[in-house]
Length: 364
Image (cartoon, rainbow, N blue to C red):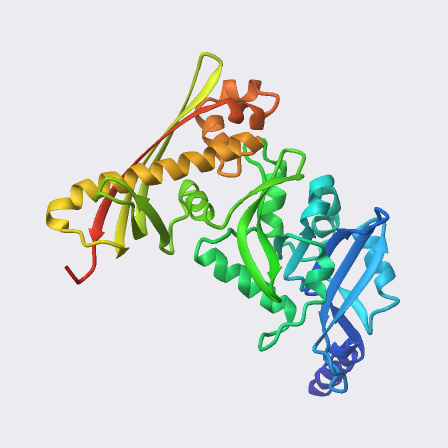
């Protein structure tokens, strides 16, 4: 009996060894890029690490033309050093000009339909032609795919941009109550720079963006404060001249109250923000001026939040998710809207922040 078990185990391991695939026989696409060529054809890029010790490059870039991303990948196998596999994709990047004129959902279909592809990859919009990104030479940095991922993650943590993976983009693209968004990336003076937020309309086309300085207020409206959200605010009324106060928003309590009156949606947004004062361009006697400073900070934060909301309404997009509250509390009226984005653009939104300074440093 033991002899038969031994023979079975030998056959099992021999079969497994015969079925194995060497790593250097595969081309692992870690980054996939979509752009449009000068003649209007789909331009597909892929970045893959090179494991061959004899190669001088640590990664290879493959560029092909196709009618769909899958078609382009099939053609790319003729150029690749090994069979291309997409299960390890970390970044899916589209150029801004391509996203402006094409429905992104249809071009990303293969990532959702084929179970061999990764849906946890970052979805990123690049400000410029992808050629500028794909053939960049970065000194003293890891492989390009890893560098892109790390730059986006760092900027997201500091609230200079947002983060969206393929699964989130899929959910937002199909949700009537919210519109998609994605982080933005660009190349500046030969280096990668992440900042700003790309905005997509209900047709999943790029229509505009929020700047790097507007991104922290986007995070606050999304109730995404942690880790700390840093703001530098211009304050008038504390002294005879404009002063700059830097704060770190540590926590917040939020209340979104929707209503429908006179054919229009109304939102009353109340938020209580606990902040730490990290910098001041003037001396402040906090024992006397604390309450006054809190009101001035709240007033400036309110102004900046309202400017961001107004910009979103101008673009007719709702990446914050006001529609989620409208659907939850005013379902009948929400269902009557042919386009939530257009209804949101006409909505009246009142934001009422209050600020509590919980710490102002160790020096006075």
